[in-house]
Amino acid sequence: MVAPGSVTNLLGTMFPFLLVLVDLQYEGAECGVNADVEKSLELGKELLVAGQQADTLSQFHAAVNGDPDNYIAYYRRATVFLAMGKSKAALPDLTKVIGLKIDFTAARLQSGHLLLKQGKLDEAEDDF
Image (cartoon, rainbow, N blue to C red; front, side, top):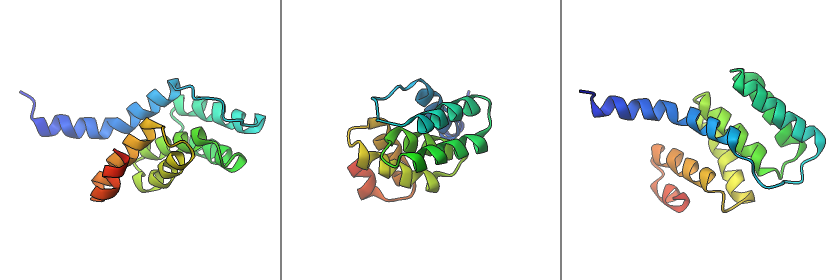
């Protein structure tokens, strides 16, 4: 029999990776990105599939810097931060995503989950 705690721990460690995989399939609405930003996002996806998280993060940084109003760039960077175990770095990006696109459910749920882990119950409730 498998202990419930070990299943919960396994799901907790795999959740960021599942988000990254789901995000790779997500094709959001057009964000009005320019060619350089689009190229950075595509290259970042390719690097992520290859397992090069640090290089992926660099590409997503470039995409955010190239178009600060692109919610997809912030969301993808946040998912890489989460995959790297850097939840504190991911939270500002998720907050920015919610500010840019208030109905982006995946960002709201992930932000709420992180806030709940930090003990910020009121803020987590707002996201949920």
